[in-house]
Each structure stands twice: as C-alpha cells, then as structure tokens.
Amino acid sequence: MDKAQLALIFLGFVCYLGSFIFAYLNTFGVEGLYFSTNGDVDNKYFQQASPKAIAFAIVWPIIYLWNLAGIVYILVSCCLADEKSPVKMTPTLVPKIFWLGYCLAFGSTVGWLFAFDREILGLSFALLLIAVLSVYLAIGTSCKVVADNVDALEANNKVVLWLMRILIQNGLSTLATWLTVATLLNLADIIIYEDSFGVTPAVLRGNISVINGSTVSLAILLVIVITWFVLENFVFEKYCRYIYTIYPVLILATSALIDKLRALPDSNQNLIMASVDLAVVLVALIARVVLAILRRNKRSQRRASLDHEMK
Image (tube, rainbow, N blue to C red; front, top):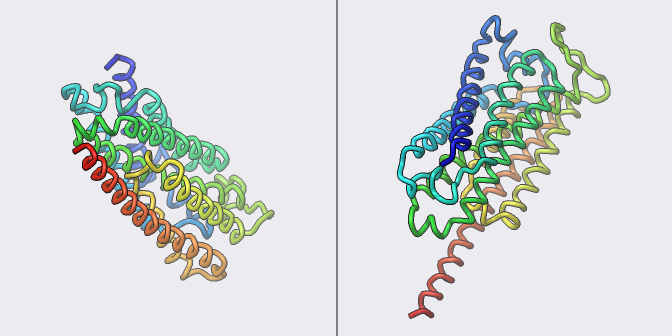
C-alpha cells in the first residue's frame, strides 16, 4: 500500500464525514450556515415528482450508516494482513480510480447542499450530476476489479469478497440510486422554475406547467430503470451480479410519491406515471431474481459436469 493510496483513503473518509456532518446540520437549518432546510426549499419549489418527506427521512440515514460501515471496514483493513485486506492485497480491490469517484461523489453532495440552500438551481443540478456520475464510477471500478479476481477471492478469501459486495458495492448503489432520483427532481425544478432566492412563492418559468415538468422527470426515470435492467442483466451481468439495493430504493421513492399524489388535486397524470414506474420496478426486480436463480443453477450444473469429467 503506497502513500498515495493511503492519502486517498483518508481523503475519502474526510469527504464522507463532511457530507454526513453538513447534511445533518441542514436538517436543523443551522443559522449562519444555511438559510433554510432542504425540506423547506423542496416545498417552495413544489412539483409532482418529489416523494413524501418520509422517504427522505428513511433513506438518508440508511445511506450514511451503510456507507459508514463501508468506509470503517476499509480503514480497519489497512491494519490487517495483506491477504485479508481489500486495500493491501494484490491487486488492490479499491484502486485509486475508485477513490476518485468516491471523493467526488461525497464532496459534490456537500456543494449541492449549499447551492440548493441558496436556490441556485442550475448549479445544484450540475453538482448532483457530478455526484451521481462519480458514484457510478466508484461502483463500476469496484465491480470490475472484484469480478476480475473473483476466482482467487472465492478460493482464498470469501469474507473479503462478500464484505466488498455487501458493504461497498451495495452501500454505494443505495447512494447512487437516491442521487439519481434527486438529480431528476432537480431537473424538474430547472424545467419548471426560475431561481427564486428571497422570493416567495417561487417564480414559474411559464414554458411548461408543474404537472408536465414533473412528468418529464418521471418519464426519464422510467427510461433509466428499463435501460439499467437490460445493462445489468445482459451486458454487465458478471460485474453487477450481486447488486440488489437499487430496486428497494426505487420502490420506496415511487411508493412515497404515489401516496403523496393521491391526496393532491390535478395529479392523475403523474399518479399514472408514478404507478407505471413502480410497476416496472417491481417487474424488473422479480425478473432479476428469477434470472439470477436460473443462472446460478446453470453455473452449478456446469461446475458439477466439469467435476464429473475430471473424475
């Protein structure tokens, strides 16, 4: 483990910790640091694509706790023997490019907190886009390096293999999914509203209605879900084989949105769109589980056949 990698690990922990602290302080709208809370800003820029507040209250603690477990595992592994450490083994399971994505993801969320608080919508969207692309980079890097070394890991250290899959890959996938949703919500804000800091209510652009602007984001989400299902099951299957947290996060988001829309007038268009999103997510999850079981059985049969031939 070289000094550069150790520095990046420490920087990753600092970025995670900074994101957690500033997000926690935002929930109280600490005076002198923030002008309001994210919830207040979200209510000001009302739209029909944003889930009920309870969804945010559930998912963010899960994201931060899960990724706390992940970063603590990486830090502790720096003190373990080489063969038991994802950091020190050769090749490392957390290369420098992984930490680049990790640091940018959590660092950009800090910038987003302040930009969104100041209601600079374009900058907020840009920072979230950087964050979500960065966490995709970190996950992709982790999945590739683990898949490339999976035979050696299964033979010599299954504990490291499963800890990487559970704590790192699925933890970051939870963050990536919610950031994807948040990015689409910010996109809807840009489509519908002008920056309105210090102005209440928020100023509409007038080019598109709140209803139609929200539908745009929900339609894009549907395209993303379908595209990702195809990619993870038929293009990158061996790399994404054990990532499942995407679907529970989307089920939470779309269910909370449907619950919100049921109580709103003039929400039929987006209620239908959100229901379609939820239905597709549920079908995709069931199909993914079925495909995983079938492929696992096929691999087991192939392995048994090879063992029989060797005998």
